Length: 567
Image 1 (cartoon, helix red, strand yellow):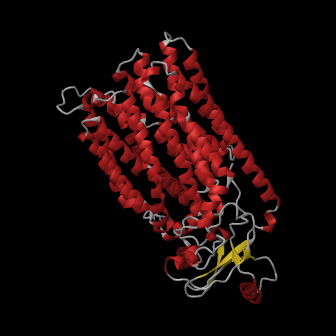
Image 2 (cartoon, helix red, strand yellow):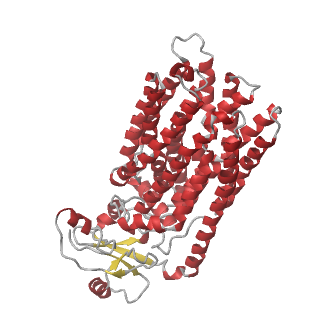
Image 3 (cartoon, rainbow, N blue to C red):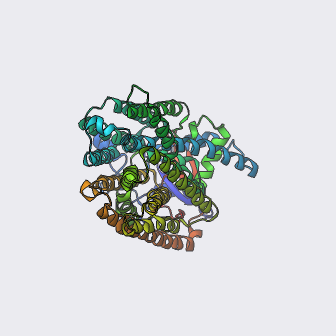
């Protein structure tokens, strides 16, 4: 590999003539140094070429862990496409932008939201199967059911290693393989005849599905601006909140299929698996790797999408080289750990939706058939609230943390009521359960989206995703074990843990994140004139120097002083 270099040069500086640029190449080569992330440049060290694996690593890192940009391959994955098409594409007009925004919203958000719906329908299959006599058929009890949910998230944690495939391979193909595998696993539920078989399938289902949500978030980040991402996040995730609507109606219909010779829970698995298989074909046909190969966009629309996203985020869209310094920066950034802490605490309540049908049955006054309709109403209520949250954030920018607190309050209050109301007040208990169970999903939605948009640098973003999903998985391993059969029917210990950790301490972490990022923004806005006009130069394989926007350089949020954190 030739010693190609990337520079950041102030284009308004009159001294930046061709001769000066040439001199700068010889005297002040730019590197991005791990030892001082807040600094934007250090002296580039010259090293002798190395062979083998050591030579491969040397192409990316020196002995001090510094990352050296040496060719156009180290820039954004859209660099070559934009090099060929950017100058040929006129600026977008307001009318064209409105049309493009609508097109991207319907296709990208619609596609990912439908995938998310099926993802959570798959997760909920065991919960609904519990009222279809599956427990009796395979010899399952409450604690075994909890163990199956725990093993799902053990697989979920181990499956975070699959994010390496996201970094190295086209994400459209990765998503196709994931969808195909989880379709097979849903169908395999029909072959289960004991709890050991269920344990195995739930483990592998968690392993396969573990990176699906991060991949979908990456896709939306490639096509949507920061404001659009924040505003559409509740719409996207309303599918996981409202999954009980279609699944509940399917369950209700199957419960009336009393003359079937096939066990109802198997019919349920076949129905959900069939829907997932159809979606797998859709993903194979249309799911994009990034804007440059989106089937549903014309060439000029692809350029406009890339311009809009990079202008909004000041960050790269995709990068296929693993950058060690960005991995380390993700671990050193305190904001990463605050997000991890939020998901660890808040998701201790995540088994509540899976326990909901069992809790309905324990409280009494409704049958298994009725519980499916109650879950439909509960999901509908949650979906409506998600749309309200989305509408608010569309018109009111930088209110994510406060929205997290606001939408946690109903679950907090309802949980206190559930441990306080007399057990003979059945209607009140049912109402509080319907209020507590679905709405804490909205803060989860907002925080997961914020976790993505508040981070720049492709490798750092994927690393932080893995960190967050790891602790999300840990919380969900613990969560089912809070609901022990010895504590039934009120499960007081589980409710206390959720009240204190999930619905009180977790929102406080969101406010701390807001405080830190707001402070960083104030510092950057005070000095924005020093950074906003900076551009970069990439030397391609032919030795030609190409001027690029800072966003193309794949800098992290701590390196790029023009990056303003969404709040």
